[in-house]
Length: 369
Image 1 (cartoon, rainbow, N blue to C red):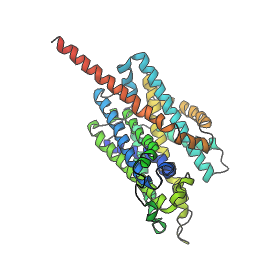
Image 2: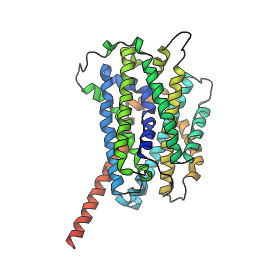
Image 3: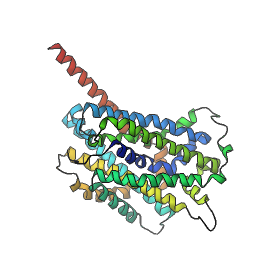
Image 4: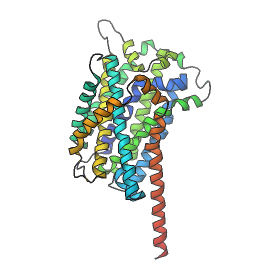
């Protein structure tokens, strides 16, 4: 194995929380309310089903191919040439995802806090920090998550709790006025985010107790869903139908908190937990991309390509989603289906082929015994 470190299922669970929640906690109310309206609180529950499916696919594949990552067993299933092509396409998907996250992060920070700081400077700062984290290894990444997750959770809870005096529960009534369908339509992007749990297929080989991965990652998915429900409900109970008009709704919640002489300008907290969660998400994607590249091209170590990839990703980030409008269009358009394709459809096909091949081999052996 290229990676020598070992982690526990609990550490993996903690690593997955900010990895999934990073984007959703800031823009989920805006995205979901445009379809689900006041029933936006119910939409994350559909996401849990998708997240659990992604976890199940990764686990079943890991049982068929123990001690191997998704990139390693693709060629065993569909052949060396086709397998390498699919693996390279998957790595390109990971790199594009990193570039998109970088750009989203930079646009949020420059639009709300650092108006005079060049976008490449912000992207470079975040990317270099993530690169150092990745180069330190999987164990260090998990320890970083152990430090950041409690902070992120506390900041989210504090932002919602401090807004309690201004909430209006009547804003989310009547419940299911138009049935469950609007909530389901509003859940597409959340389902896309939760499908990213399939990234554990790169990490399961390095667990000390891989059989417990389903339980702990499912717990992580439940906490993600509970967090999104809390954020969505709080935003709509305060902003009402105006939730649809503000992309960064959590920013408005933070700005809404004011205790003169005690607490003001808490929007800096939103920036803090956004950056912490995004840093973890970038690190996981970055780790999977360099590890996958090393495995495809039979390199002895993935650490040698971390900094060359940093330069590549900085360039890709410059070209990716140059405006907030394009970001919004991608979220409402192709992004959910793009995520479904790589996190659910392709793995499902690989799993079905692998199961068929296994049964075929068993049938052939039974005939000759």
